[in-house]
Amino acid sequence: DNPSVYIYCACEDAAGEPSPRQLTIDYIDAMANSESGNSSFAVPMPPDVYRRVEQFVLDHYVPEEPKMKRKHERESKDSGARGDD
Image (cartoon, rainbow, N blue to C red; front, side, top):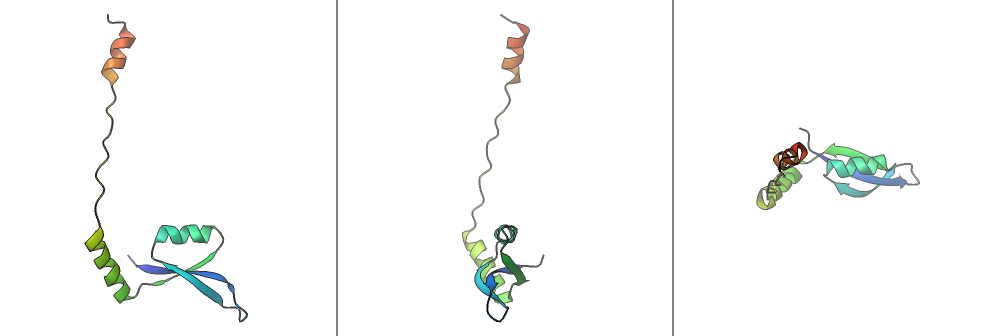
């Protein structure tokens, strides 16, 4: 609902401020970075960036084809278990 840009920061500089090192808009990547003990901060995504990301997705997104599910072959297992010859 609230698009964000996540900023990865290195250790604090001499003034005690975090030093930005990298940006991402991928929530899962940002959470993985945070869980590994690194500092990351979420800031609201600027409207211009949102529009560019949206256009990129519209231009390049290709949905994955559904994976085929295997059917269980109960009939062959059941017939063998009954001893049908």
